[in-house]
Image (spheres, rainbow, N blue to C red):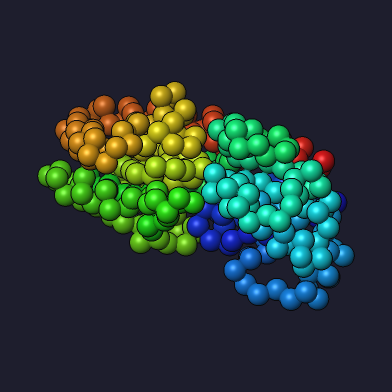
Amino acid sequence: MKKVLFYTQDRWAFGSIHHALNKVLYSHGIYCNLLDWTKQTTNREFELLNNTYDVFVTMPDAVLSLHSRGIPLSKIITIAHGQWDILLAKSQATFDFYPHLKGFGVISDVLKSKCIEWGISVIPDVVELGIHFDLFYSKVTDGLKVVGYGGDKETLNFGGQEIKRPSLVPRVVSQVNGVELKSHEFFNFFCMPSYYKEIDCLMMSSTEEAGGLPVMEAAAAGRLVMGTPVGYFEHNAPKGGGILLPIDEDNFIKSAKEKIEFYRDNSEAYLKKCVEIQEFARYNYDWSLKINKWIELLNK
């Protein structure tokens, strides 16, 4: 059985994604573990890990750090989840390591195009993110009374710009009578399936996003999903995955307020839309639909 070690964060979206991958890949004959790069690991431990694992998977900006601990580039696969990962590596790398790696992947066609635009020497494979649909599935609620938020705390991109904009959601909800806001308080990702059951609508206000994962998870939960045209949501929302909101702050607030008021006052339309979103998630987001490309990349 091939042995793979994911070297990344064990929290938020990265934790959710890689814990899920560990389970799915095992059922396909690949044994995986996750090593949290925020915890100290000695050179001796890396020596022993190198003797155990066939493949090490990490982000582009961590490739040379992993290599400096004795892991051969030929055993490393790098996967970029966002533009930040590629640009940070490009700004810090002392040489072009991509041709020497075992493999290179990105989680969307948009990132693949960016790699070509930025002159990255290797064209990456596309490996899309998924979710465990059954884990997040729940019965659709009967009306819109509680709005939740999908995303992290304030986060700056490579250019120093705020990309998550969590302050926009309370500004929207405060203008709508009869609707309350329930923040997820940045719970551990293990808590999120229960959090989605406490809300009727989830809003994502990002200017950049990989998936984003919360809109995929909340869709599986049968919640009314609204978000900006970023990540997968830009393409999936018009196909039935949710409701697109303008990315401009003022128009975001105006449009979100109007949408919430409409679905608050029209329970039949709300129910129909939530069922549509959930069915879209069922046939488009589950890991079983995404995993083959990951397997191909890991088996290179």
